Image (cartoon, rainbow, N blue to C red; front, side, top):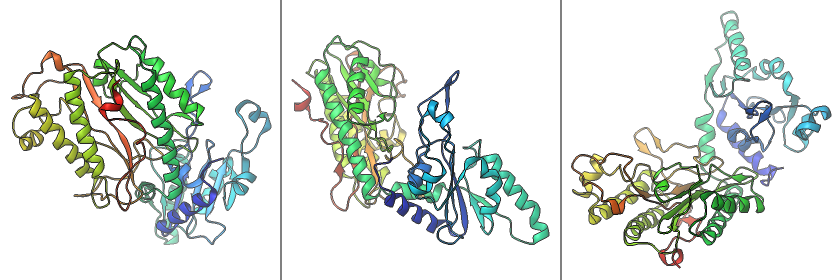
Length: 441
């Protein structure tokens, strides 16, 4: 059962139904994904389906029918109870519990979906369904749509429109409700404490995997599902690989260790934190100079996460500090404005400064609407994660200085999870230390 109560899911469904107007929405659950032979990957529910239902079983379908009377607007099709299968794969809620526990107005076995879909779509002006993502369900939806189109000439009715539900649903998901915010605080708390435990465990000569084990054991001990994504435990030059997940190198005295890791809760809310610190407890001069630049950029960018700002302005604030600092160190040359305009910093900083966070680690929601950036509003959560990565992997742009050997192999990223409020930003991950005095010993 989800830790968010059914009243919250009911409010989300009501908001979604209100925005559908005369359109019916079809939101499928995820299916099990084969791993090898007859084994599957651990099940992970489709986030849109979960957001509206809280139902954590595969191969279900939710229908939302705003044109029907109350008591007939939320229909669930689910796998029926079957003790002969459940002895192998675990209990199913079945049709009755889909109503009694998960709030469906009406529930049916999933095998009845092809037969009943046409009936439930009667009177709708369109179908909100995401094409190209649900191969089991899409042929059924298209068959019903084709049959309806075939009858248009005879009936004189307008044909059903086919539209994506994403714009409506993802706008709702972008603004977290109070229950979601509480869950994200918990995900950030567990994730931050895991980082603190990992840092306390690090010694030269250990393997990156041993640190990964400390982090992920703590996630599980705290009741999380496990890591929200492949944990990155990257020492030395490995930290210059943004999505490094091999995690099998020895920790070398004098190197930095970058850890990018966060937990996923049982109800799928995620943490996403990055910290970088010296393996032996002391920064050398080059490491400290770069770390101070990234930390200043990150702290100024975090402070700008307020209502009325936007994700682009947060990125630009961080980028300005990074470029100024690199020019001061002689790793870049030219004016700050020209370096940013030409993109001649990208061999040292090649990603954006953050992303939305929620049920997905890179959560849904637009960053721009046409020519205009989306303004930050109370209830949005985003990461703020500037970094610097000094290596030979990318060519130095023409006109920029070559990199001295004493700088190479330093990768630094600092990332926090930040909630937009009506006043100052709330850093959900603040208990993971990042000031230099805390990182050195």
